[in-house]
Length: 113
Length: 112
Image 1 (cartoon, rainbow over the protein chains, first blue to last red):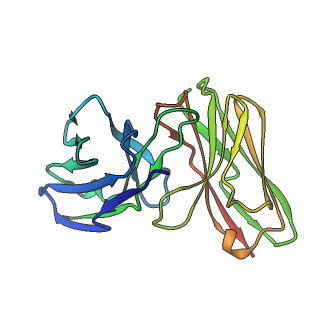
Image 2 (cartoon, chains in turn red, yellow):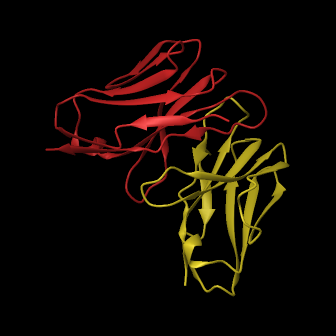
């Protein structure tokens, strides 16, 4: 089955800095890569996603890049703000049947004001 | 309506109790999921119903029993749970495969 590695497990930055979280996946058939943000005590919420026919996607301060050859994808947050502090999970999905994403272990992002 | 709702928000139960968690969505999604999540860990898939057909994670103990009365409702029946089953239980739905999942707010379960 699919295996997703996520690094780092903890990331501490100063407000205004950029943050980068990286994930690698094992199954070259994976074709959908969502990123979820989970604030303390709340539900995971999709913040951005990318499909395998696209190399990069951007939404305001958030961007995701995908390298299919190397089987890795990254989340980039620019101009970080304290409200960006949360746990971020990447995921990869192999097509076919039910949508069952494989999650990374998560990155705890702390943005210091 | 673009939300997944879950009840109850919090549940405390003893190891001999029987209780049920409920989940509902009105987005016309045909796939619904139960996840278990421990603090600062990723959600772990327990069950998925896709077009009302159940797929099971073989590692889930039989004290958890899912039910899908219709395409909008999903229940999780709990019986004879253990303290290690204490966790946040998340329900999610998606339109079909290849689509994002929408998560409910979760039920915080404590087993005494």
